[in-house]
Length: 610
Image 1 (cartoon, rainbow, N blue to C red):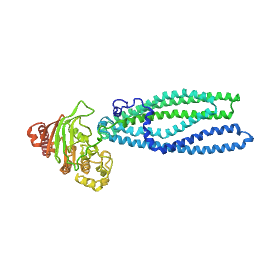
Image 2 (image 1 turned 120 degrees about the vertical axis):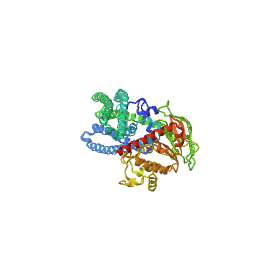
Image 3 (image 1 turned 135 degrees about the vertical axis):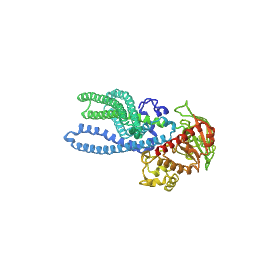
Image 4 (image 1 turned 90 degrees about the vertical axis):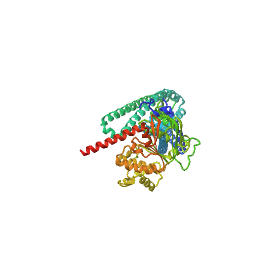
């Protein structure tokens, strides 16, 4: 994925142009939750490093004093000491790995939970331009990259940092002159490390973005697998995904090449400097200014320091990649929802009457600010009234529902529920008073019972069955292989359209909300299923304020009132009879539908007779 203006997170959060390991510092609050584990990790790292650094001291003593008949007893002492050091080193290294790795797992688990919860809190405007597959990539692939950084990579980094610092200090203690030569070489080694690290970070971020693009396309395609197969688009989809994967591979290969070049450069410079220092030290031994044991001690510390620095150069690339991942996650966490609860939220009356008022409401979607979907809309719905909203496609019917549920805020005007401006109410409390049955209800890959109690998980089995009975769903649910425990399959693929609609109605009934929104609730059903669903809806609508969107006007003939929208404006209002008598837009729509239906019925009867 190219990191351009199409990225919603980047647009909303002001993404970093240059990913940096500094992004990992944003996770400090997560780390500080587990201070005892951090202390245990640092203690284990310190002990392991100290045990490693003790080895050259013992070796020096053996070389300088142990290899003689008089000092034979010292050899045994030194070797026993080395075995003890090895035991301490093994225990400390194991503890270091355990504490650091589990700390990383814990931090990333917390982070994943917080990112998901944050995504759930964002408003509809964010998801209008976001791609689900890309967000899932950030939630999974990016956090996995960070888990590596906080797990094994962190363990290696801490170990080698302590070793490097300790080895340098003991080198200076052993031979200040030779240490000066080594320390002069360090800037020559570090400069390529820093310069190459920037390139590694950039290419790692590109690889992560490209993989997110491929994941987004795969998620989108698999969600529409039936459409893909119906149109024979499998080969084209495979080629497109393959191309996206190849692009992701190329980006990852470029990042790996940069890290490989970085590793080669650093390792060569490190060990070349050691060879040079060793040559100078050999001259000191030959001149009698240094013992062989002391040189051996210095060389061992130099090798430890060089090895630690080379390891740090390799993990630097991983840390840089994790910094890119952290930056991408930070972009999401930086997005703030626009629909939030006021500091001093107004309280809706209890019990709710279900009265709805629109006062001169104008609205344009954020993605199309120049194109208003509603213009100065005003109307009032009395408690318990059943109101139908009709009009041609694009008239603003569904937009009206979106505003009433406060998925968006009106550009101007007010929307009132029970005489309270919904902008002054906690959105969660508002939505508890309003439940909807959409045209294409969402059914989750869970049991039928869990789908009905979705949003009300504490509901009892009896309450679930009662809601299903009121929605005319109990009979078909009991006929399923496991009854209410039957799994619905992803998106409810194992259920018919009418069954999905009735489950959605039962879900809305279970909430006992005073306002019910029906958006084309029967448009996709056959006549038999529509009759069953309409019967269920009739019972439910009699108990609450109901707004119904329907293109098929036969479904709204019994409405108390009909609002006719066109181009975001309320142009007509009344009952079916009064609107037909006005001979306006509603009358034309009614005439078109009912006459077409009658012609189709007559044609069918004629064909059957022939």
